[in-house]
Image (cartoon, rainbow, N blue to C red):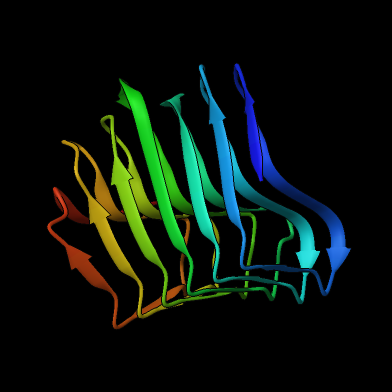
Length: 171
């Protein structure tokens, strides 16, 4: 699945659904501009994103997997996620949980390249569980894990492979 245009392209967009499975796909959110997303879940519960290759490319602010407003109680497992920015602006994210809680994010390989401020996993909500993820970040000012307002999220057995910076927390 490929979505290509200027900006705001989404490879797979699931909104207001339950028990959805996104399984064994190659998904690309690609564009000449910014804010491209591979897979987006919003108001989705009891669903799975499993064994996918997810690519998000553009000039900046691209996201591999976005768990957005009320995307709760989902499983994100065994995916390969890569974001790349053609510019130096960055702000790319492998997995972003923003307004999403009680998700189980396990065994994902996350590669972040391109631009300052790009992060492997960014958590802006509480109560998510992350385990056995492998995160690589390759640009100055990028963190493997960025937690803002993510109280009570748990990270277990997460491998940070050569990150420029390890973990940042803000509130």
